[in-house]
Amino acid sequence: QRLKQDLKIVKDELEKISSADWKLFLENKKIQIKNHLLTDQDIQVFKYQEKPFEGFDIQFDNNLALLLNTTITPSQKSEGLARDIINLFQRLRKTANLVQTDIVNMQVKILSDPSNSIATAINSHKHLFDKALKGSLSIVDAIPPNHLIKQSYTDPNIELALFK
Image (cartoon, rainbow, N blue to C red; front, side, top):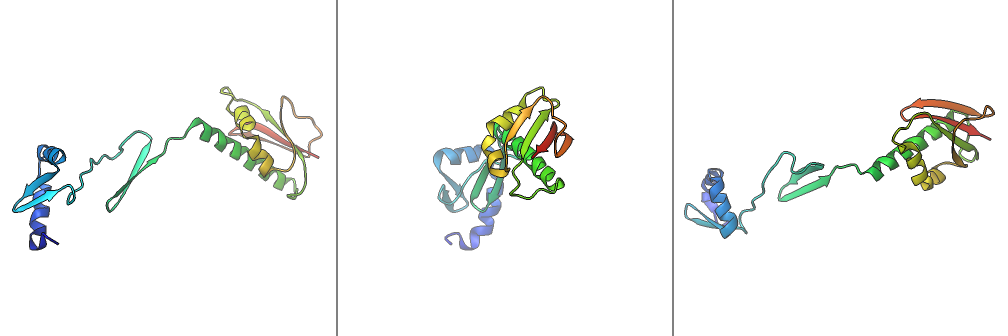
């Protein structure tokens, strides 16, 4: 309110200020624009970067800047893989015309996993499998022929089988 009719003039002058003058403002917390002394209560200075830090995304809303960490941790990657395998088992149960209350044994044969991420995901997140699926889950070297249904997948490179 105190700038009144000078608001546009001050705004235009602010756009012309050099980096050196902005550095002085940051040190002194005040700057003279025409006949107006502006302080850090009047002006907020942010250094804008398209990507502020690797692994972060930034969003602005009025006087608020939000930094969101977008880095996927190994733990999150492992949990995501476990959830993908759970989803594959749920689809396999549906294909076998099983209902939610049917308790079945589930087996996973890992066809290729040089980094051991599939076994790690299954073993680290057993609680997710127990919560989402009815029955026991085991990792096997070979799937016996007496399965209800068996399906191979390429991503992740596994075979899943259901047994009564």
